[in-house]
Image (cartoon, rainbow, N blue to C red; front, side):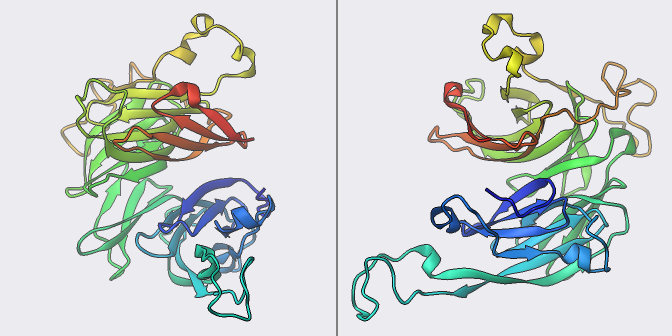
Length: 377
């Protein structure tokens, strides 16, 4: 088990070559774990690199929290955002580590045949800082990265409601998006498959769809629970169980919102296609027909009209929030989804992996709900 962090682990990021993963923790550090250790550690997983640059940059105490982590595409570089308003991009250095002998092989005979494993080729050796930035707009709450034909763009959201972009190739800011303050502060964001749109979720359960090309909000919803949206991810595919799309690939958003709830939404229609929930201990052996409505009903996205004038508040005049739970500032439900990752494809092997504040990792099968189970915890 991972026991090196002294506070909550809030995010995980996996390298594209799947050689290591990086954690983000409220103890002010990010740690790098090599996946090869899973087969060698016998259950005692140890980090090979600990990055504490956010705390040491300004001689700050360990009260600095790392709120999010993202991998830089096509590299071994990592972006982290912290509570002191800083964004760091740092590289995980690897070195060749070809072993002289392997189990079952003769080290004295170079020509002896022995199996070659990936982790015999490289090991994580350390880290080096590439760039840092201090937006001075409060905490950095979320970070993400994507490549275009001409730029390598890092996007990060601050506590004051601005989504900044940062071109890592020239240190310029291609665009900046301001989130309306009445929607709440941003809690998660994700970039679409084609890099032309992004979704942002807030602590008031609002989901905003942005056109990145024009920096314009095009759709706005609020989750029926009005609970904070803790995690978002996107996929462009067709769901096997969704008959309404006729097998056509569509953009979907995976959302962690509510009490241990993971949902799949069609972003074009704003409708929920699938929802997975964890029942409380009081309902584990209750017949499905006797469950309370909140356990069996699908969540909904209430569409909010967008004002024609950019300076006009969302809830002015017509009272767009009158039918919603706008005035109820709900605390984050416990337990809740803290991170999610999944695989959705045309072959039907579709699943989600979620990690929650209840210290459980769960497997959700999108094709066969009866095959869902708790992996750890």
